[in-house]
Image 1: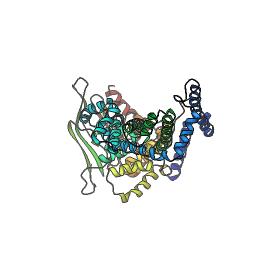
Image 2: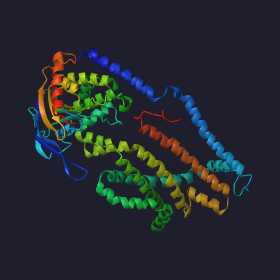
Image 3: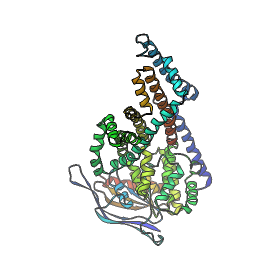
Image 4: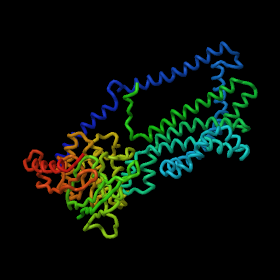
Amino acid sequence: MSPEDKTLAVAAETLTLGREGGALVPPGRARPGWEAARTLTLRLGSIVMMLILWWIMTFFFPPSLIPHPIDTLMEVGAIVNTGQFLSEMGSTLRRVGVGFAIAMLIAIPLGIVMGTIKSLENFFEPPVILGLTMPGLVWAVMAIMFFGLNETSAYAAVSITILPMLAISLWQGTKSIDKDLIDMSTAFHASAWSKVIDVIVPQLISHILAAIRYGLGLAWKVVVVVEMFGFSNGVGYQVVRGFNIFSMKQVMAWAITFLIVMIVIEFGIIGWLESRVTRWRPRIDAWRR
Amino acid sequence: MAYVRVEGAVKYFPREDGSDMLVLDGVSFDTKEFGITCLLGPSGCGKSTLLNAISGLEKLDDGKIQVVSNNAPAGRQAPRLGYVFQDPRLLSWKNVEQNLTFALRGMRIDQAEWPERLEKYLDLIGLTEFRRQFPLYLSGGMRQRVGLARGLVIEPEVLLMDEPFSKLDQLTARRLREETLKICDRLKQTTVLVTHDVEEAAYMGDRVVILRSRPARIVGVFENPLPPGRRDVDDAQFIQFKKALLQSVLKNGKG
């Protein structure tokens, strides 16, 4: 093949490529600045709506039941300012983080094994399904009775509660992976390790990200319960303290700080992680309105 | 160099009701050395099963398949086979170059040889400027090129191709056929290509093995009268060869 006709061939296909690339982002929506502004307006709008609804409710209930939004937000500011926020939230985050990491480290291999080996799927299915139906509160009580009131019980309660959910997500994800790619890797004599790392895990990325989202949501709920039982720090403890002095303002203020942290994690950290690990996937938004 | 000898290949597939269906009924043939052997037959006739049996993805129930190689390096037990699939089957999360190194690593090829090989085959297949691109950003034709490069970069004794052009649009398929033929000829690459397209078989095949379906059985083996460089779809001799293949397929293929 002479160099000229190769160049020709490639130039022609680049052209096709350019057209295909163009189709991914329809021309009518190709104004990223506007698009981002609209998305932001809609999101902020929904938050403002919630605040207005809250404010309206203050007309019908005494402040001890529904405190004024402004007072509550001031309380949030005070919590953040005194530095109390960092230490309490730090304790809670550490419990969630460690418990979550333990659960994930077990769930990924367990899910992959269940999705690929039929006999192990049959063996592990009952405990996973049973674990899923067990209320987090029961795990929390059992962990505290078993380990005592220390960090270990918090880690154990969090990881046991979310493990079945993570495992199911990865198990189903593994079952849906592309068998043709496994055949391809067999044809090129890829090692078992390479099949897992290069072929299976990347196909599970979207399932892993979904599992992280659900898993964290569940972990928050359990950790607060564990902390309520008698820890002397953490967001759950602060909520109980607010309850003991019957201060709805404090309970709500701590709940709000909690929400803020979750939003940062959801949109900031997980969103960033997602865009990083899915760089290879073109964004196709064309079908959504 | 190398060729494949298939002797009395028999394969059954289990049916839903538990009985067995005969897919390959004692298929025997030799491929050419240094050239493309096409397996031509109607869809679902067992061609792909045969190809998978050659690659070792599928076990035969009887018969044997041998890759006869005169110059395989000493100490290597299994012959090296490259595979090009109907869909490109690329790892979407790896760029073009990483898709090739995935094959090089799988085949345990010495890492010192990688840069030179990548250079050579990316250039040969016209992918050099796309080496860092991810597959989903490439057109269908480009993706199939990457698949071809992956099959070749391991420098296989035999390259196996399973209807590699059938999912491409006509123009892209035509250009890719032309280039593949040139490349295989230049590399003296022993190749087995499965197809259901008579013109493709006449154009690509130095030897064409015709199979009838259910169960697959060989009904004819044809040698191409034209060398790779002289095959032109409008040439009288080419048209005559194509007709001969078509007649053989129509006379024997049922389905």
